[in-house]
Length: 293
Image (cartoon, rainbow, N blue to C red):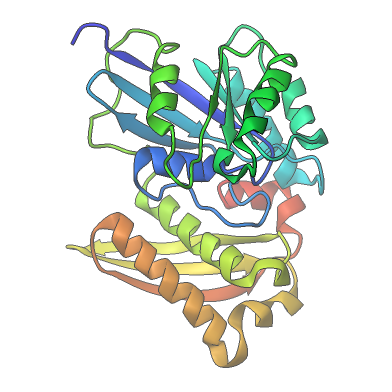
């Protein structure tokens, strides 16, 4: 096809502006995990969307962290900066209802020389729609954006317009991935992420940020996947919080994670989970490397 375009697009912004939700709704599949807890996304994650005239390679990045800086967060901030230097387009995602100092810090690291699109998410939450235009005008004075696009990721509003706008800035070249592929990550990685999401969603503020998941065994027998996973926390007193009374909380976490895995993988999953304590893992470079960070 003539004029086929293909390129990489970084999705950046402060925590909790809806970056992962935006990616999931564009792809039409739950790839990037979401929760109200800041810094749910910890890894560079590629999401692939292929249409008749373009292939979009979205790189979901961790929210740029300004608080609780440890080795884990330093590594994630480094990832954000590195991704922006390697892509064809940058999407800077903010909320229509708020632009604060944390957004301003991300604004300061936006690249010059790469097209940056300002994506104003949650536009549907504005009480008065007339406020959107002056908000867009004000933001447009702060940086030379290639385009400004208001959307609602959660409601699938204006995502087609966003794709058309992105496409204008992608290079003309053939697709890199097959049209049926939606990520470059393997199922082992995705299983760990889905389990970690359930920990965050079901425990919320009860649990500190320093929890992760390690897949210790992943075996496939036909359509059945047997997965052994450890939920890792850094303090002994957090273990009973995850397990819950009579093991009920861990059972709920495992059940909901298994259901999401079966939906994503398209087959039955046998999932066994347990909780391990590994003190100080989030500030230990060797531990982070062993856990895939």
